[in-house]
Length: 114
Image (cartoon, rainbow, N blue to C red; front, side, top):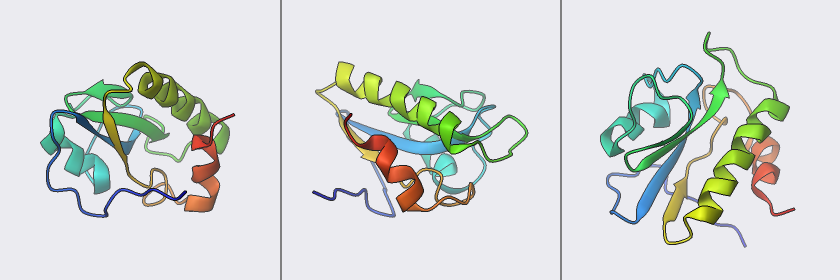
């Protein structure tokens, strides 16, 4: 089953978490990261939960694209968080598929159950 988040998320409810690609230093200046600021993302927090947003780093602190292996480590941390918070709905954007330059085919398999 394919489930996707709309390209434009205007609001989130108290039970929803906006999941976006970030950089490790938490500079949320463009793309979905900038949108996440409206949902509680905090500047300086580049990984994990903040408000109703969850950052998954796809770039390092120098804004260089991370390897797929490193992104996968962050995705697995997110999956653990999601398992611990089954009462939440996670609106997962196409992380790594904009500014980081990966395709959905590169990233999507990281989210499949093992």
